[in-house]
Length: 458
Image (cartoon, rainbow, N blue to C red; front, side, top):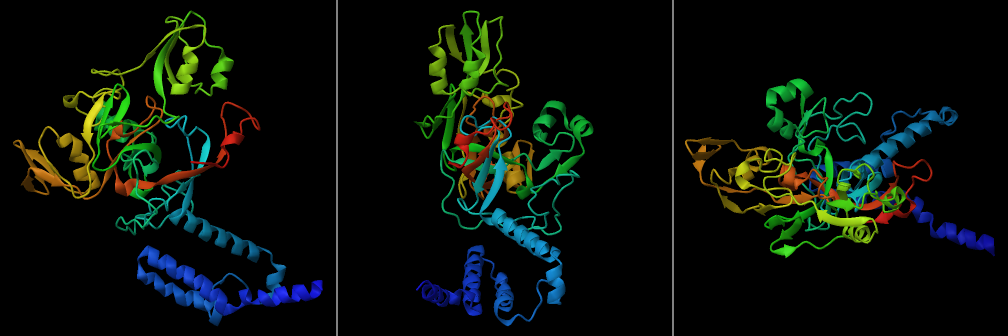
């Protein structure tokens, strides 16, 4: 009876080995991908799939020996097959669907922690067609050993994004290319080049930290922040509270602000600080206060601290104008004293939208000058009080794409749009979908593994 059942099973599923079924399956999937891609030149790949599964006229695995007996004796052929398949599959998935990232800084704590490993969904907002398609597989912009650039700009494509499941929404956590990352200092690759130039001058910056590397949009370093305002929104930050279109931002659990915590002369028990999960690099006790001058807390953590017996009082650290160092006008977008903004009292600021037209004046030009030049590739001059774009005098500008305003949840320890301005739509990469692994650098293996965060969906 079992033999008969097994024979029936083999007959029932025998079509899976049929060459026409295999061609129909893979050819159909390939055709759907071409339609999604929108470049019908790729239809030329269908004959290749037909030959692989049906006609078999071309020896696509050219590295294989024709002699089957010699092939069996050489296991390295199977390794070559496996490596090539893995590289092609991983590159395809990374390019169009999901890419792995790690969180190196605390700008999004407690929402995302240092040591979190993420899968970022590119299909959420639609994957971008690579602008620099010639690149070393599975490497973003720098070769891991040599430190050289991992890509070539011999071939450059125009920006184009495939259809995704949705658009960037307010309060989404978003991965994007660092807007100021088009210029990188070789000796200080993580620094903001433009901030260094504003503070130290161009000649000194390039001489001390150069040479300079210029990168295309798709090879800029990637950041992750929360989108607090989308195109067309008006944003204000009042005493640390984010207000968009007149509405207070929802109070997300992971949002932190810094506080000055005064004690009765005794510090908080280090074990309590550790158990609360506070960032130990940012917790400093000053006996002269006595207390903690700059401790980052969520609302729940603030409530816990205030109830402790040795706590005398707690004050929020709110920057008012003139701002405290280093948040001078040279650090905060739009990098001029005229606006008198601070990191905690900022705006109101309108976020540009595609197709919208704004009146240009010398007063508001600092808000839009980088958009006009760096992101939308125009020339811009101001002569005798008149504004010239592409050599023509004008008093208005129409935007070519949408922009966004991003902020870290760790509000006082985040390099975000308050410091580099708007994020263009063509810089958007995707959104984190799942934390697949997480480790705590303050602990040793295996206690450093954050088991509760593994496969946590975001």
